[in-house]
Amino acid sequence: AQSVTQLDSQVPVFEEAPVELRCNYSSSVSVYLFWYVQYPNQGLQLLLKYLSGSTLVKGINGFEAEFNKSQTSFHLRKPSVHISDTAEYFCAVSVRGSQGNLIFGKGTKLSVKP
Amino acid sequence: GAVVSQHPSWVICKSGTSVKIECRSLDFQATTMFWYRQFPKQSLMLMATSNEGSKATYEQGVEKDKFLINHASLTLSTLTVTSAHPEDSSFYICSARSQGRGENTIYFGEGSWLTVV
Image 1 (cartoon, rainbow over the protein chains, first blue to last red):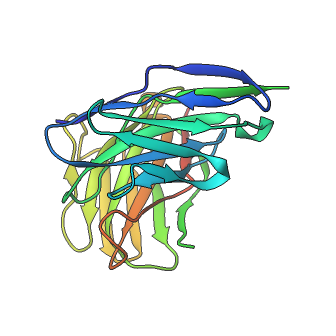
Image 2: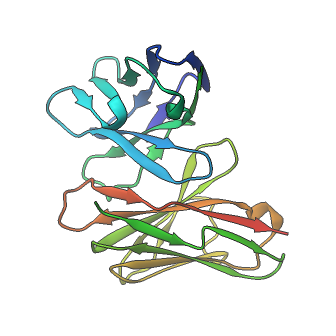
């Protein structure tokens, strides 16, 4: 079975500061990795995904993430956050070759303060 | 880009009644659709996987007779919450897997808030 752990339930940060949201996963088989963002009362929007190739993945809104196989991590980073980045961020995995159902972490609430 | 539409976005129903939520892929054919449930301040939990033209596969602990899923066409899946109770109040989100666009091109709907009173 697969599991996803997001170590920080809440991350407060000041505007224009860098941020890292941590994600670790557990799986005995190969997986794909995803980060989604959820704004209040809305659905999910894909930020970025790692399928194969370069371990550094760039996504929308200036976010990037790095896949580290040895540490089974896929941390999300942004060098300078904006107020508008305030949202819930979910890390997820899906098993390679599966139908595509996602296993989500519990989410990290990013709060950007002026 | 691809769009998945859910309707209604918000619904309030009386306890004991049934409510249907639709999930449509607007510009692609979805061989597989997924239904998730999200409780307040919690993560998304997969309820079931539906494939067009076949019965849905439910996750352990999800009552298939209570949460009826129909995937009658390549662009529409419906979730019907039967005999709804207040504890069914939740945020329901569907996602659709795009046929022919790669194994892991999955798009999410905007979600549907269900409140049972």
